[in-house]
Amino acid sequence: MSSILTLFGSSFLASTLLPGGSEALLIWYLQQDVHPPQLLWLTATLGNTLGGLSSWLIGWWLAKRFPEKGLKDQHQRQALERIGRYGSPVLLFSWLPIVGDPLCLAAGWAGVRFSLATVLIGSGKGLRYAVVIWLSGAAL
Image (cartoon, rainbow, N blue to C red; front, side, top):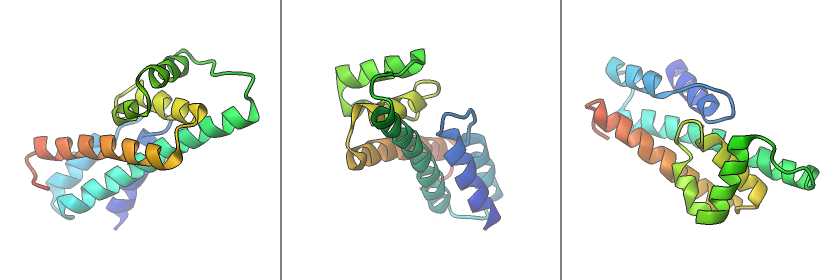
């Protein structure tokens, strides 16, 4: 059970504004063959999605608290421009390194509905982990 919690925590932190990755840990747990790949996929996807939603929540809070300030970080401004240009489906790419976390934050700032953000962020992250599992040779 501790491996599931570790994978959840790693996936969560990897999807916040903090640096980190959880794919290597997922692959290692797959090789240990202690838990079914479906459980590992669900755990990593849930943790990573909740981490992305925490960034969405920060963006939403910042927009409410400091509406006149704007987003200062270059990645965040670029992410806000992408959301403005392509709309909320761009959140399907929230799994990408460097740009994914600012996308989630910018979506909260831009007022993308929480339910829609949850579906789009979760879908992108779930698909990414499914590909990682498939590439590792395990079956979902």
